[in-house]
Image (cartoon, rainbow, N blue to C red; front, side, top):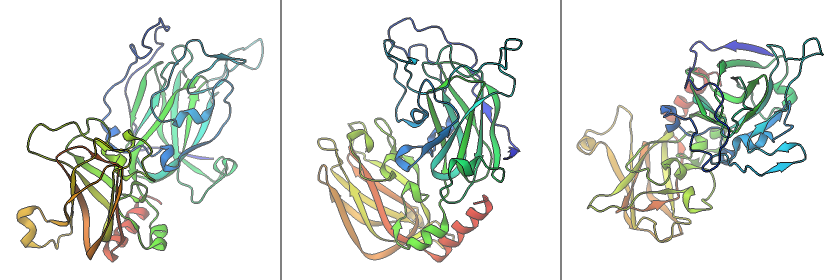
Length: 388
């Protein structure tokens, strides 16, 4: 296994040491956390995108798969099993030394888990959450990243020919805390290796970053959803994030419950809400879908969609309106319904915007099209630049 140290060391949040023993009441009352700017990026280790914990050297007390569960870790003080306290996270047994003369683990002893990202990309920040691990969290953690094509087995990932880059050097962490690390490595990664030194438990792992799709795969597809998160689309901004993140609207699949979409607070003025997207690359859009699945009494009443071509050749006539071209005029939406629209003519653009009136929500936006020659070339160049 080849290991490379990152050129730009990440910045830790600074939590260290034990948390107080659980004393009853709300277990999150003394949870330590901070605002991490990088959490505005989507979670590349989201199970909904296809992420998985593919292997771990030890999961005696709690299963490795818990690391990627959605939502915060839960805590039941009365939940015990045959092996001991059952924790909602990944927890290994206590390490021991070689014998009675030296019963302590060595400085190099550690446990590890291998994570396949749901969408390969550039990592902007990592959160190692030790919620409810108050005296049984790791003393320190480290995280490495690798870019491996295809669907490698755990044995292949652990092989000597895989190059691992240090994203988070060995850094002390705190118990019952969200330990955040900013990462500044401009490379595309497909897998992570998270290490806990020397042993212990981690409740959740979140890996925030920008999706960098495989341009060869998109080229073979030809026609696809050019705003989908898994294909490299992203949310740039939104008017309201009160109930749920706007990124939900470009997640894979259909929404399966109300909070799996985007819903705004109730407006009491004459305005409207909106989301602005960056497409995977410059594309020609031919059809679109607006889905309001599971939004019944709170779906948007109407919606309009506009596209902007951000290339330098943008028409001067559009400059007064920021270059936005309406491709779907304000249209009545039905609750809990997938609405499909074939455009009368293809529209080329790099960005899209959905406006909802007056408020409410949508669950998904799909923009069906194909990359232009310049868009495909730009995607190939970035993929190569990032070592994909």
